[in-house]
Amino acid sequence: MRSFVKALIFAAVSLSFGSCGYTLQNSKNPRLREIGIRRVYVAPLINNTYKPGVENLIYNELVKTLVANNRVEIVPKKELADAILSGVVGEANYSISAMTSSNSLFPNRPDRPTIQTNVATEYKATVTCNFTLSRVPTPIYPPGQIWQASFQREKKFPGNNQRDEFGTTSALINESEFDRALRDIAQGMMGDVHESMLAMF
Image 1: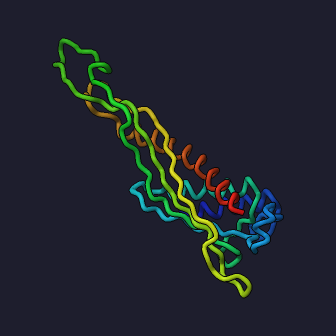
Image 2 (image 1 turned 90 degrees about the horizontal axis):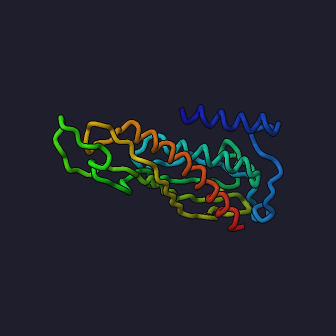
Image 3 (image 1 turned 180 degrees about the vertical axis):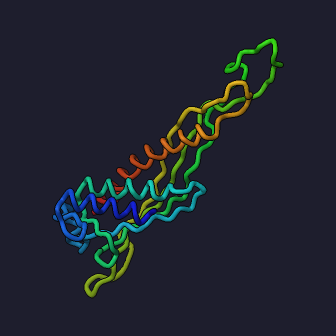
């Protein structure tokens, strides 16, 4: 699945820019060219979280961001690259950020006993990532780390309470909201990654 997604992304890049080898031409970053970095390979991200597939979501947003800004050439194989951009997703989860009494959500009815309990009304999604840009060794340039940075973003989303079931929430609906929050976080974070990486040069 990951290979299929990567193939689609690079095929789209190729069709959009009419280039061979799925690369973007004419890097607009003079400092990167000065230190011999013209082509970058984005390695598959490592997922150290319990959220399946989050590494693919962030990887796709990272490639899209680099392609859209056209500041470096993106190549599909590390053998073609001057540097490798790698990353690790260290955290991707959500936790309760606000609660309220169940009585404030579910009015008492004569046929139902009063139950005093707290219900989650809001959650906070959190994502942390670490990225490293490393040089591919050549006869002119030795191997080494060029840039490294860690990023964290958060986004709140509403809890979805099931009526008539005090103190519970719909896990499926919450997961759907979490997935939407992850997409927003990934998009914003990859903009931060792009700006941070290129600000070093």
